[in-house]
Length: 280
Ligand code: F3S
Image (cartoon, rainbow, N blue to C red; front, side):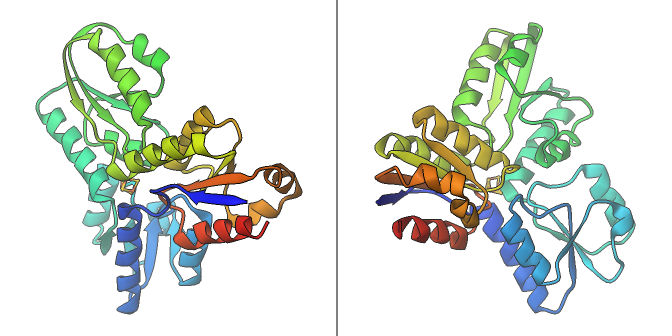
């Protein structure tokens, strides 16, 4: 079986940076809790748990002697302010590209702009990002874009992990809605590169395997793109999923398989999938 790995796949800059920060902190003997899961990837979170890094979901669970690590997706501004007021020791692992998005929203708010975010309103990144303005509109479909009223001006910002083609489609709809449209393409480079790589790879192979958590936004987008380009696309969470009879029965039929992985999937997981397929 021929195995091809997408030119860009797996850990992105923001995830590598967050894990490096945590490792350095642990090596200095500090104890860490993360506010919400650091990233959306179970094996990586299990590894962190094995190193003593626990995750809390509310301020009540924060332990006094531990450093509180802010996840790559960021946290709402009011929560951050509350933690600072409480004197919590904070290790900020928010991805700098998420910070950039938050800064843009804060500046637009100061300018009293009409802010539109394209993204998932329930995703932690967007929950945090929207806290930087008093009023934002969040949409996540073309139908929602089409339903917006005509207006004088819109400043549109994207979730960092949005599908680049979808964002272009939304922008095209907005052009007809606003007299003045200002576009902040805040989709991060890692997302763009991974999406571009899977678009290129998917038509060249019999099937595509996308590795990453089912709740990871960027992984879900990769799977969606893979499926558009290759109907034999499979989304697995871990290498162990390949051993499931239902999945194994599907993949043994193919003579070539492409692999890609979400930005929070570790190189070890990716190698495990590659090695497993090579042995078939
Ligand atoms: Fe940052 Fe993009 Fe990764 S926003 S965490 S580099 S997917």
